[in-house]
Length: 449
Image 1 (cartoon, helix red, strand yellow):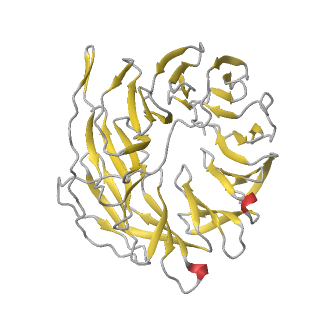
Image 2 (tube, rainbow, N blue to C red):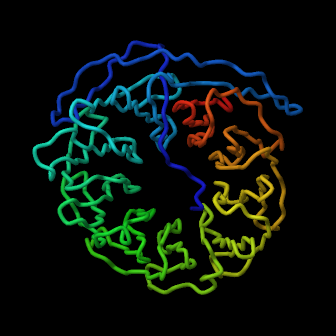
Image 3 (cartoon, rainbow, N blue to C red):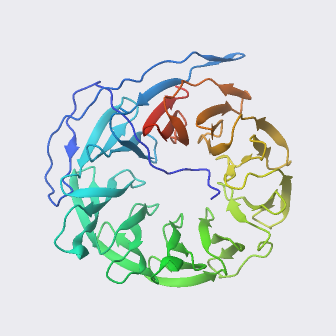
């Protein structure tokens, strides 16, 4: 819910800048590697008129755009921001693109026998995980697979069969393990399964009873990779120890748990339910006071120094020092319920969407609204750049990029699609704009050199 980083999928195109041998992986079971040139031309490299900020002159220009004749989807940025992962649904391949020179380094075709459902790159940028569904199979129990590809050696190193569809997957932060969630066809249960990539074996399963009431709404690794937490519609949050391969505690709610949020040091977890929020110490299994029915969400600053609660009942964000739980500031604002507030990565500000379609940037220490960004339409998405300088917003299919240093809006090129989501790469140089109407589009903007 309240996270400043965003790890959603992205899509991009390649420039014909060099002839390149690209690793090709066969997802149908073979570990063979083939040389293949898979570089395509890009038609979008248009510079946009520069925007003056007093003594600061900056160009924002189109950098990459995918061919809208084919069905491209954004997968994600790599953790370093050097690579962009995109999936071409038309050609049924996944590509890893080096962003600085727009070169496709790896192409992974899967379409001969499979349809992909989820794609994810490991945090160390070594492994690519692809969840697959067989197009035809003699046995229903052997239709679903999780394939792990080693990009450094150019081979598929593991394949884990599943009895049912894989709805989502997440790498552990240390890139040693991976977990999937899905419906196991044989038992009808909602299952979270954890696998070790190094030893090529399953570690354990977290079973949630069958039926839609027990569906898993969210599951997350702790930042130290020691725990997995799962949140379900039945109101229970289960926390498993990876080393012990067993559950260590359950947090109960009377209403469905929508999301979970780990503290940066992995010692605490907040569970966000329709009936309120709980914050629990994992080590002592004690619930912290001060939260409950009046706190719709609880979320940590990226540096772990503050914990904030957001209440829809009285439209107030309250910030506490996480050392002594003393209140630092309290901010009132007119809340738009469906757009999550976001900490800036430097933990100095919170951006929140207000009911008048403005985005307020609030200083945490003095509870001051330092900037208000007005929009002529409903704001549907916001995203901080990783250096906390820029805030991108989406409203009525358009985007804005705001420079918090100069307090000015940047001029951006016109995008030939209705914008829906924005994603910054970790370097803060590039912004991905994803749209779906009238056709799926992915556009990369270069915000600064």
